[in-house]
Structures are given as C-alpha cells and as structure tokens.
Image 1 (cartoon, rainbow, N blue to C red):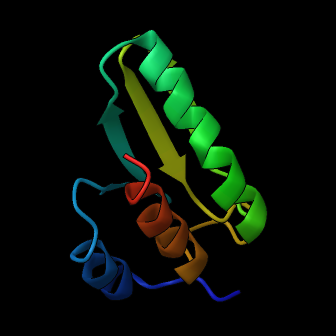
Image 2: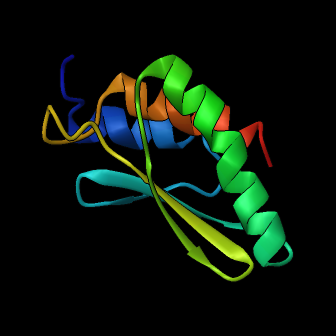
Length: 92
C-alpha cells in the first residue's frame, strides 16, 4: 500500500470531522460520557478493525477514547487509515 504525501493527507483530512494529523498518524478523541461508555465504544471498534485487517491504537481516559491510526507496516499514512477513520466515525 502506498504512503500518502502531505498534500494527499491534508486533502483527505478535510472529509473527516475532528481528526488531526500528528506526525505519521491521524488522531481523534471521542467523548463517551463515562468509563462504561468508553469501553463500549472501544468494543464497537473491534468488528470494523478486524473486518478491515487494520487496527488502531486506542487509549481510554475515563470518558474519553483517543484513537490513533497509522499503517505501521508502511511507516506512515495510507488510504486504509482514512477508510478506518471514516468507519469509526459512524460508531459514535
């Protein structure tokens, strides 16, 4: 899978609400109401991540889940990262 260049990343970010580029990742924090809501949200991430064979890094801090996505095998951002981010956005 080909890495996206800076211009492509910037363009693709325009179609994703709340996602930001941080180095070689795209990141978004999701407010889930409380810890139980955060865990529930993370559990909902499992199916699309497994289906796509593409797994985000996830951090839970009580009512907030921070999701970071990168194609580690390619060393940066690819189209797959943006597809997964769009799918995650449908879960909240």
